[in-house]
Length: 112
Image 1 (cartoon, rainbow, N blue to C red):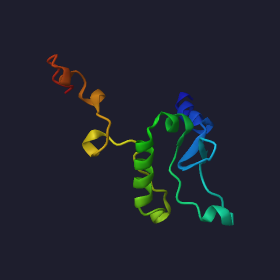
Image 2 (cartoon, helix red, strand yellow; image 1 turned 60 degrees about the vertical axis):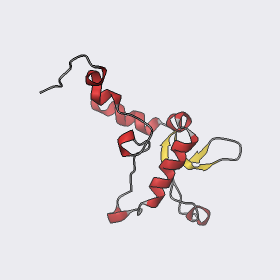
Image 3 (cartoon, rainbow, N blue to C red; image 1 turned 180 degrees about the vertical axis):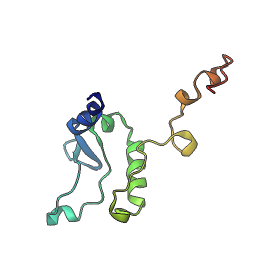
């Protein structure tokens, strides 16, 4: 049952809402409850705490902005957006792995 390792890891991760900072540092836990106080909270953009720590302030702001600009809960399903955009989509991350050796000029012609 090695296929369940990823899902087990996913559940064990500490998920935080990068759209709501705490005063003392860090981020609020992910999600909202049905309590009246949480109804006023804006829609959360949740990522693992380790991912949130590795993101720049600009990347966090961008991800939250893109999440909140989309219509939420369309068709009863949650709305997902990319956490970090690639350069081709207007972001800061280039996709070096995909291009591989071809960009480095070693005569690599791809896999056919």
